[in-house]
Amino acid sequence: MKPRVTRREFLAASAAIAVTAALPASAQRGRGKDKLNIGVIGVYNRGRDNLDAVSGQNIVALCDVDKKLRESAAPKFPSAKLHVDFREMIEREDLDAVVVATPDHMHAPAALYAMNKGLHVYCEKPLAHSVYEVRKMAETARKKRLVTQMGTQIHATVNYRRVVELVQSGVIGPVREVHCWVDRQWSGGDRPKDTPPIPAGLHWDLWLGPAPERPYNPAYHPFNWRRWWDFGGGTLGDMGCHHMDLPYWALNLGHPLSVYAEGPEPNSDSTPGWLIVRYEHPARGAQPPVTLTWRHGGKRPEYFAEGTLPSWGDGTLFVGEKGMLLADYGRYLLLPEKDFANITRPTPSIPESIGHHNEWIEAIKNGGTPLCNFDYASVLTEAVLLGNVSYRVGKKLEWDPKRLRASNCSEADSLIKPTFRKGWEL
Image (cartoon, rainbow, N blue to C red; front, side):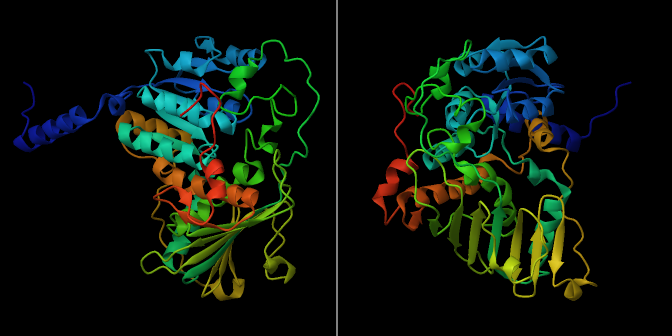
């Protein structure tokens, strides 16, 4: 005999079916599958790491404009079809989702093309190359109700989650001051003037995409593109989303009120060796206003010179009314240590991650929202990119997030929404 279905069970099942049926087709793509069909755009550097992280799914397509790189990734996935142009790959009927791991200037073109075709997207950080592109990506993901995740893998670590809980528990008191710093330097100097031949198998025009037309040079591809404004955002663009993620998460920060950057004399072509950027954030409910200061290229908070902090490397410092919390990717320290020797740490409330990529995959299959979805990631990335905008125009930006412009600085408009090369307009 078949087991009897109760009225409550029947109504619950009917409701679940109704909710699923009400979702747009894009939101239902991949739902309930044992393995997703994934295409990966960009298979070198971060692309290779991302490819490995999703390799438990069906990797049905690999796309890269460089034949050498494309074919180097192929042996591990013999069933995957190889593509040169991401648009051709995305037109396939069998895809559920894509991973975008190209240079920064191609994030938005690839991700938007995929989302407009109803595909879920995992995109490396920073979310895009300009503030306008970031906002457009978040709006498209929201409209299509797609499952998205930005590649800030450190967000999934136990250490970051415990730091967030400590700050939010109030153990160091209200926080008005935060510092983030990294020693890394991505700077390029003057644009190369030599014009060597394009390597065989590299589709240079496709690599450029929406960026200004430039002759091929190994100073750009395959590795050092981050040093050039045309393609990347330097050290802040590379590392800002990782380190600023922690205060944005712990303090529930939104769009900044103002952004002011200082650094060496700007170069119109390449990114700076060092920067100091100050972000002023408003009060949030009972939480006070916050000044977040970013530094890179050997610049560090004055607390190090004063001997207040241990000689750690890259990190983040929360300064509260009752003490300080110093953190890096894998550890944290409450200071002064003697004042916190006997504190009771909060009971963990943020579940341990199943893995940054797996959060995205499981949300596609079973419903849910990854923690670094494009709604969250877009606010963080916009702030990161505005630091570079302020530096390049040489002015403090009074930021108007609703109008997507600096109300006091029209010179910033062309950097907030750049001109895209013909045929690549968004």
